[in-house]
Length: 160
Image 1 (cartoon, one colour):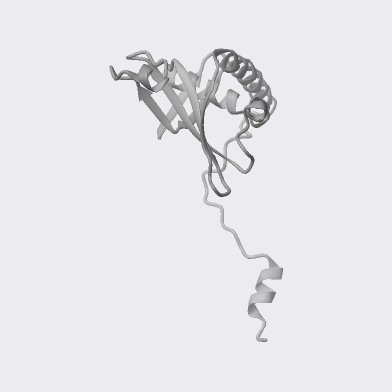
Image 2 (cartoon, one colour):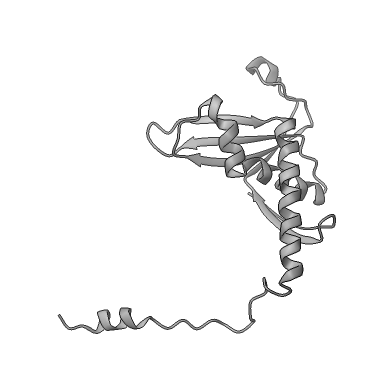
C-alpha cells in the first residue's frame, strides 16, 4: 500500500488516499503474454471485492455507481502530487463467494477522464460545504469520554 497526503490547490482542500499498489513495468516481454505494457510505464493497482459476478456488460455501471473511477482519478492526482505519473489503472476484482473468481479490469483513459470530472465536482461540493461550516471537520483536542448507556448498565447488573 502507498499512503498519499497532498493539498489539492485547484480546489483548496487537503486530500488523502491509500492505493493498493504501483507497478513500474520492467523490460520483460509482456507482449508474449498478451499484454501491451511499455517499459518504464507506471500502473496504479486497486484491489476490489464484490459479491456479484464480474461480468463485462455490467462492470462499467458498477464502477461508476461505486465511484471506483473517481477513486482511481483521486489516487492518480495524489501520486502526481508526490511526483509519480501513473500511466494506466487496473482494478483486481475478487468475488467474495466461492469459487472466488478473480478478474483484472483496466479502466480506460475515457473512464479515468470521467472519474476526474466526477472527482472535481465532489471536491467542489466538499469545498463549498467547508466554506459554509468553518471548522466543522475539526474535533476537540480533548479526549472523548464515553459512558455506557443506561440500558446496557441495567442489563449488565442484572443478577439473573
